[in-house]
Structure formats: C-alpha cells, structure tokens
Length: 242
Image (cartoon, rainbow, N blue to C red; front, side, top):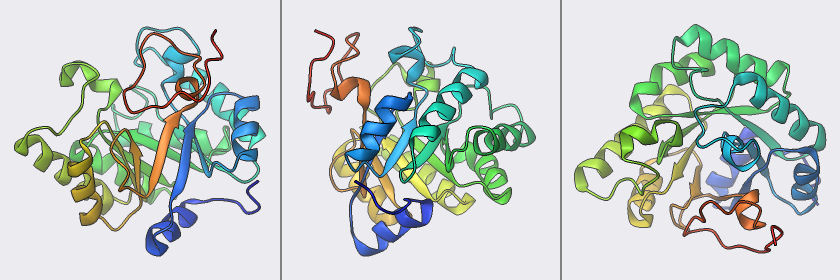
C-alpha cells in the first residue's frame, strides 16, 4: 500500500534516483481503489475507455463529459496514486485557449493531478500553454490512437530511421515545452531506449521496452476484460471475461 502521495515531482525524483514506477489505465472507482492498494503509483484514465468500457469502435468518439465522469470516479478512489486524465480527441486541438480550459476542468472538476496530450512537436505550443497555466502535463508519442488513421492503424511506430528521428524530435520538443514526462506507446525498445537517454524527464513505456522509467498497462488487458484485440506486449494475469 502506498503511504505517500505520488506526484509529478515524485516521478521526476524516480528519474533522478533511477527508481522505477508504475502506471495502470483504469476507469472506475473499484479498479482504481484496488490498483492503489496493490501499490500502483499512477493511474491513467485513458481514452481507451471509449473502447474497453463504453463500447465504441475507436477512441475519437469520446467526449469531455464522458471522460470527466470517469476521472471523477478514479479520483474519489485515489488517496495516494497520481491521477492522470487523458485529454480526448478535439478537446485540445482547436486552440490553446480551449486546451487550457479543458485541462483546467480535469483538475478543478475531476480532481486529477495531471493531464496527458497526444502528439509530437506540433503539440508543443499546446503543452506549453497548459504548463504555463500551472497544470502538469504528460506528452504522448509513438502510437497515438486518436490519430491512428494517419499512422496506418494501431501499429508500431519508429521502425525506420526517419520516423525514429521524428520521434526523438517530438520528445525533445515536448520536454522543452514543459511536459514533466513523456509516454511512449508501441515504439521499438531500442529506439525508445535511445530517446529515453536523450531526455531529462521521466519516461513511461506502454509497449516500448523495459529501459524506460515506468511501465504502463491497461487494466482491461491485464485482467482479460477486453477481447477485441490483445496487445502483444501485455501479459494477462487473469481471464475474468470467461
């Protein structure tokens, strides 16, 4: 059981002290409660809830109100774990003002500790605006499900030299914009390790190898509660669906 509140500063301390931390994508009060009791440091209310909980075909259908509903539930369960709200599609792309307002709602109404924004260097100004408003923000690079149509589907990213260089530029741009951490999803382990070494902020791996500062998984995947597809990097610890 975690005894102290885990914060963005705690994550940065883990990076400096070369200590690992954990992240689990959860969407409701009971799962968040048990995850915290199990010692999970950070709880991401990911937009994957669109598919795993709400039955949508993809993540782009998710609304701000739906996300807020679930962030509130997770925050009520979490006394010590860091709660991160995933900003849904079109809640931050239109303008920096829109992005700051919606990020602020996740803290003010949802009681989250931080927000997560998908996208690389093109999102740097947005991340900077959110950070300048006093809101902790995680950058998300690699497989970004909200823009998976542009990426050719839910596929591993960074397999070519050109795309690997772009990912490194994305990560550095987001760090310079004020992101306190970079989440890498479905990036080859060797590429993710190189990016990790070039950064000063903590890194979070969702299927991007073991060299990063934190490992993240989706609760529905590890518990066998989502069967439309199974990520290759995810170990199932239970088959609750059966």
